[in-house]
Amino acid sequence: MQTIYLAGPEVFLPNAVEIGERLKKCCRDYGFAGNFPLDNVIVGSSPSEIALKIREANQKMIQASDIVIANLSPFRGPEPDSGTVWEVGFAEGLGKTVVAYSNDRRSLKERTQAMLHLGDKTVDDKGMYLEDFGLSHNLMFAHKIIASTFEACLQALRR
Image (cartoon, rainbow, N blue to C red; front, side, top):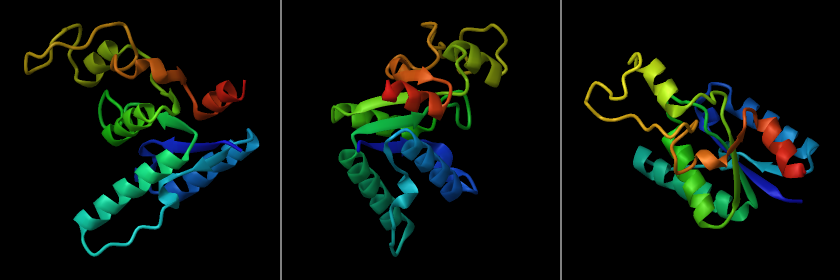
């Protein structure tokens, strides 16, 4: 059975464990085994030690997985969670199959203009140009977004 690492900002939700269990059940329903970051048991004596152990445990979990499904929906702004984006790059660098979903498939330019209240401006308040390739996400990983939902990613993988 192929294993899937479940990357995304769900770990920050108050009901993260419950959501992880639901995602893993969905994986099982499609014939996969899901690995959720909070499956790792982390113990440490300081925040910096805990952070290091979380990073190492998640890296090992990605290395041990066959596939990564990443939630690249906007997180605290127009872009996805930076940790999730890092995991996508790490997995891709390892040659893993990586697919992603986003609940907001507008172009990155449109989403940024709306979230930053820029109207139709093509530069932000600091004078920096908005990425404008007509893609839903940054050009470095937009090609990984194949669906709007987690389950649609599973359906595509099963095909």
